Image 1: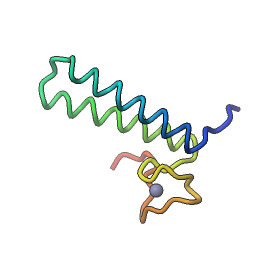
Image 2: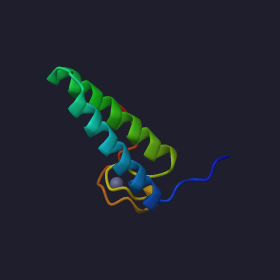
Image 3: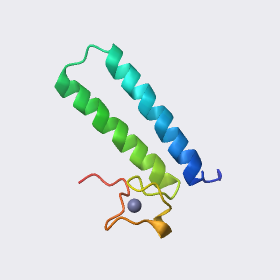
Length: 77
Ligand SMILES: [Zn+2]
């Protein structure tokens, strides 16, 4: 079993991933509606990643310390 990442590590991964995606979107020739699909998919991935490490994607805290009225656990509504 792999060790769970800390809130700090998750935030760092999130920032890096966001930067990468923005760079990639800037250089890509996707249509606006395609961009939305890419961003949605990226968010879904990150949300699942946070959930796998026991964190809420919305407030970036462990679920025990989540301050949201409803924690984002990666479910698709
Ligand atoms: Zn939360």
